[in-house]
Image (cartoon, rainbow, N blue to C red; front, side, top):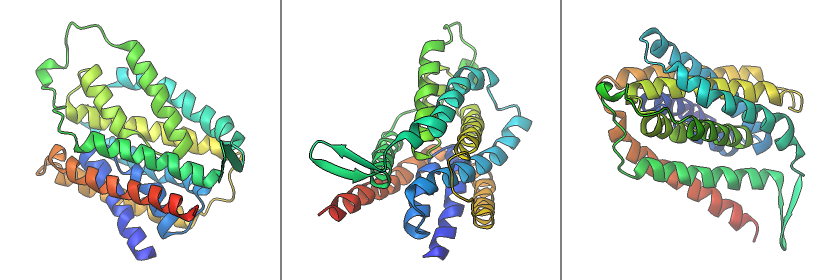
Length: 268
């Protein structure tokens, strides 16, 4: 199972390199089901892995000037604030046993169910055929920059990233392209940098509550993800990420459905 997990580490990076997101949706399930790491420990591990891979992947976009720093500031600052707050205070405050009506579930089950629901939302956004490709000529328009929507979107992504360890690329890219009218290539680079910042802040905020970090494992897993992101960036020259998103979306849908059914079945 561990060999399959390391193969999945490459796929996480491959997804980030090709479509600028989606890889973080795989990280937590891989850590939990293939490496048998408890969900509350898998979240900070996921933040580190996805954050490092995204940061390295963003470097080439920075070099090629495919980053919208205005959007990083407007979208990224509220995102960073909420991810740090979530990892430092909100997540540790969740009790080990939650009572919801007549049901009692553990914190780990709750996190997995929330994560699975997020995966379903991510899968639908990938499967649904939406044209997000904005020509370069439309990047600069006279339309007012949507500050309010971008700030709210950033806060939402930060909360989700902090709660379940997902980077939120499936939310970031549509916000950048549809709201801020940024071309897809620039949106991918900007998304990678936002994910890297969010993940780094979330991981650092978690350290005051986290257990001992297994650095050899994290560095090995992360290095494989980095290899995958370089492969994805190379393949993106020949294969359109938009064409691969529906297939990856169905894959994410299957995993999310499996997590929900597995957790609900275990309660019976």
